[in-house]
Length: 335
Image (cartoon, rainbow, N blue to C red; front, side, top):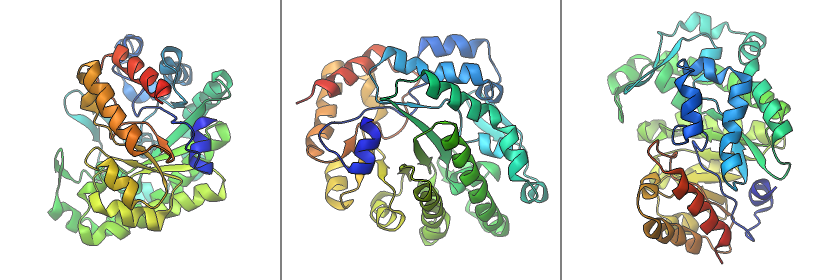
């Protein structure tokens, strides 16, 4: 598999390619399914449809990996929180009952999310053996942001609420890490061969809490995956220069850079680790010439270096699938 070979063996002879949110809203075939399945959580728990959606981009494009159609908030759902996706607002979670959360069992959690694992199993059967199947989780901190409603606005942390909830944050951090490891184990046993850890709100962590809230929880999960011999890609979005400390301490197999990180800086400062992503998703809304020019910049910076082509965030809903296909072909043909 090209993806795992790049991650594990640091092979730089080719550039594997996949996209975050490659199975989703920009594809008309996905929108058709979504239009008759209004409840997003129920759709994620529909093993047959989840598998079909996962494979849709692989039917269209010459990608090197599928990523299971699911959501990071399936974990809070599996632990008893109600999760609703509100149009133009995003996910809204019911108030967390900390006692119920702390008393959850791994058996009940795994049973509640068993359709996710079934979808992975079905997808692995249908997926070309040369293609990787990526499972994923949200990091403890990013999940806590949603579970405790710690944001004041889209990119603004409620510092007062965080201070008031210090005790709950610490309790949740420790407990949810165990459930995330169980979720990874279940996904790998079902057929996933790579794990991506999304710390989407790492950039909101106060500087003096970065080690406690971001680095240490990610380290525990990465070490768990190493014990299972499963390669990991971490994505601590928004931590800027702290990518260096993160890589040196957590030591995942791959690091996904966000679009605020310059590729030249990443290659120079991130110590030989396999690097993934970086290109702005908005570039794909431009014409082909501009798309190819920006893609070329990343490919030249990471020439003769273990690099996985991806973006610095997920594909946008308004992205034209034809431009995605042309970009993939451009990457595959690049010399």
